[in-house]
Amino acid sequence: MVRRMIVAANWKMHKTLGEAVAFVRDFLAGPPEDGTVEVVICPPFTALADVGRVLGDGAVALGAQDVFWETEGAYTGAVSPLMLRDAGCRYVIVGHSERRQYFGETDTTVNRKVQAALGQGLTPIICVGEQLAQREAGITMQVIGRQMEAALAGLTPAQIAGLVVAYEPVWAIGTGRTASEADAQEAARFLRQVVARLAGEEAAGRIRIQYGGSVTPANAVGLMSQPDIDGALVGGASLKVESFRSIVAAARQGAAAKRGKGEG
Ligand code: PEP
Image 1 (cartoon, protein in one colour):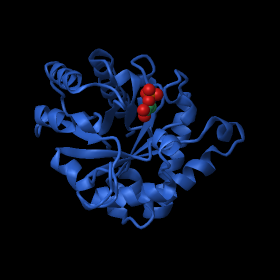
Image 2 (tube, protein in one colour):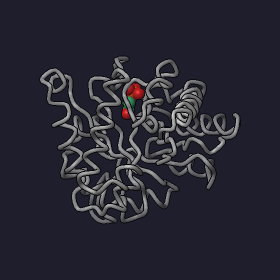
Image 3 (tube, protein in one colour):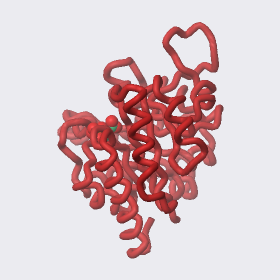
Image 4 (tube, helix red, strand yellow):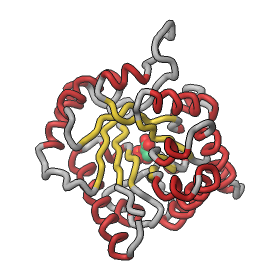
């Protein structure tokens, strides 16, 4: 099963409008994408519409960092899937650990958001990952398996097949500590097995699983050459055009390495 690599930039709470638009213009002025790697840029809400206008219907997709599950109504501060579509989004990150830590996101709200996003034709990038204490206690697979099952509840196999999942160990996010290639691969393979159990082999072969957590140009090729890792969700290293471009190039190399081995 050939899965297209997907590299997404999560800018978190960074960049003014001017900075966001300047980044995207600069990025688009570089070598054109050859189609091997799908690139997604997730600016803060305030910059979505402007960045979306610059990206247009081109090869680089727009994504949001969060979404609410209702379409409209009295939900002060919330942004709906319909509004994200309207701003030009094709993707939305759901269940990022920072949302879980600071904004009360739970497995149940992640599932509601995933369903609502799919209902508006958005592709969720669902984040799962264990905390350091959970890894040390040897319960990583239990934790990410539970998060995954909850996020996928009520979805059809076809919907599951089209999703993107980001395996992001919480202790690796923004810390400069990256999971080893072997640990990242083990978690990604386990998540694919969870999908096989819930939605069948075809969905498991099609769903794309990213690694996230202190990805840099230096470690990106090794991580994305792993057979079950189909790309990266990148925070800090996505804020500078050059480092983000290098990570996209690393995804291309990872894809080539897998083609060479007959994987991916
Ligand atoms: C993230 O925000 O999803 C992330 C992985 O951040 P960083 O790359 O900075 O660790």
